[in-house]
Image (cartoon, rainbow over all chains, first blue to last red; front, side):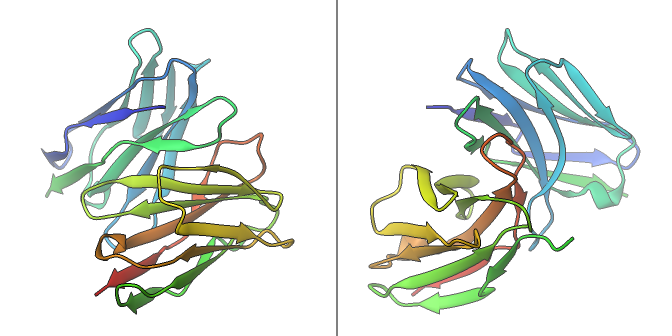
Amino acid sequence: GENVEQHPSTLSVQEGDSAVIKCTYSDSASNYFPWYKQELGKRPQLIIDIRSNVGEKKDQRIAVTLNKTAKHFSLHITETQPEDSAVYFCAASEAGSYQLTFGKGTKLSVIP
Amino acid sequence: EAGVTQSPTHLIKTRGQQVTLRCSPISGHTSVYWYQQALGLGLQFLLWYDEGEERNRGNFPPRFSGRQFPNYSSELNVNALELEDSALYLCASSWDRGTDTQYFGPGTRLTVL
């Protein structure tokens, strides 16, 4: 089955700096890669996703890149703000399974 | 549009007891997924229901089971509770089997004493 590794497990950045979180996946058949943000005590919220036919996707300060050859994808947050502080999860889904395999999460702290 | 809802919010049980958790998907969504989020372990896939049938299950023992009703709501049942079952149980829904995007509910916090 699919295995998703996520790094780093914790990340501290100064407000205004950029943050990058990286994930690798094992199953070359995976074709859907969402990112979720989970604030303390709240539900995971989908913030951006990418499919395997696209190399990069951007939504305001958030971008995701995908390298299918290397089987890794990354979340980039620019101009970080204190409200970006949360745990971020990457996930991968194999075509036809509709089952998400999650990374273990990255706790991002944005220091004002 | 109302989001995914779950009940109850919190639950405290003792070892050996049984528990039922409930989930209502977003209106129009037919697929429901259950995940376990134990401390420090991320989200682990439990079960997937679509159109009333169990489509897939994760690496969990048979005492974890569930069902989906004709209105697409779902129940997760856990029998013979163990201490390590203490976790946040999250439900997610999506439009149908042709769509990957899943939207999560707020979860049910289960504590087993």
